[in-house]
Image (cartoon, rainbow, N blue to C red):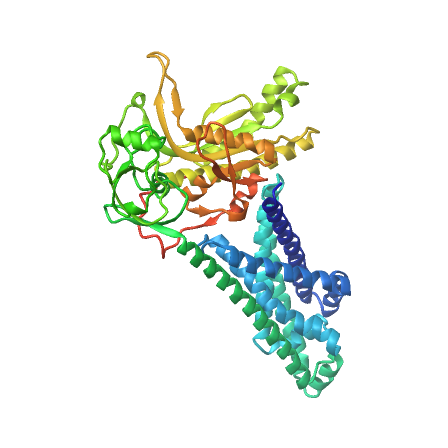
Length: 573
């Protein structure tokens, strides 16, 4: 496993472990407060049980460590993002993650620290009374609620690949709503009870003495410490935001603009051919040979920036000479812009024209190859019936994830398959492929749990996901012309699948797919692969477990740098 993959796995494990600890802390706190519905004595007994976790030095070290790790990971997530545009679920999880340390600092200072430094009785009744007649009581409840919601979302994302989680999810959802509701009821019950006692004449000072509340100087010192912690966190958050904008500024400095004849302008980074730039951004660009330089249908006239292009290669020069092209004409599939260009496509797209399948249809789609690892050796000791039975059970488990995403199985290849995602545009095709690959990982985990319960070894797979322009058509004799797929994208996807065996990962997804979907992958995890039969190295993201794919990808669309109107989108069911 590469350093980037190992680092990504360590970050994910650290987030999970620290998150589970903080969620447990919030759960026990809610139970402690909810005990106020029964009696003050029961609330005290529950608090004594809770102290088994954090009421001693090792437990407090674990609590503060979990808080610091989770806070550091939240700040790192802000600093390392490519854009602040994200899905609602991602935004909610990120915002809640940043709110947790912001308010938990105050809670820990006025409870654990105040207890150790000033001898404050941190019994739950004392803490509730201390905050009761001020906004602090609601702030602290909302704090616990933020921790709880954030933790429940994280717990669901962690356990959703298990076979048993969908069965208990309705009950866990009810529990997730019930626990904070009972805690709120317990807070109100105990708060009203102890406050009614506190305001009786002569009781206030006695209660303050019994609970050993700090004097005004002590409280001022606690607020001073809280202010220091608050500003330190804001400083770190500001540093993370500044790092994000600095990285985006550096990327913009390295970016370039492509302007088309109809006024469409896009901003991209170096490395792609002009044809790939058009296809990945949903801009129609004719290319009958699929970008292999065998035809001239993708050619363009460069109206501005020709001097910044490298001279044509010998193969491109021969092709241009054969058609007697002017000096400013180039093949879009052969040039990789390093500076801004203004271009005009020679063959203008005139809309869709219905073509008989026997004549061939060119489409830019996502292609997925899947293969079972080590199936030959596994099947050596099985009867033919058992082999077929196992394969059919496996395909029954994972193929529905392909069809639900909008794809289809083009053909079964023994212990593997080839799946196509023929959507209305490259973006939706790529998104469908990503959804299918991620859900296949979840389905595989459930399938292996079923096998384990039957005493069988787990099934391991490898998948290669790539996108490109292919030709779909019926090829063969008049009476036997099956639908066939032709194009370098098919070969690249197959070779990526084969590479997963060497890397020991479940999925290799090319950067072409990620960018076509309008997403971005962690730059330090991307690798270049020289694939047999593929002219240029393919940059791809190794994913040890396909079910974690969506956690690695983020949106890369940036409204400040993207000015073109997206093409009409199809639907992915």
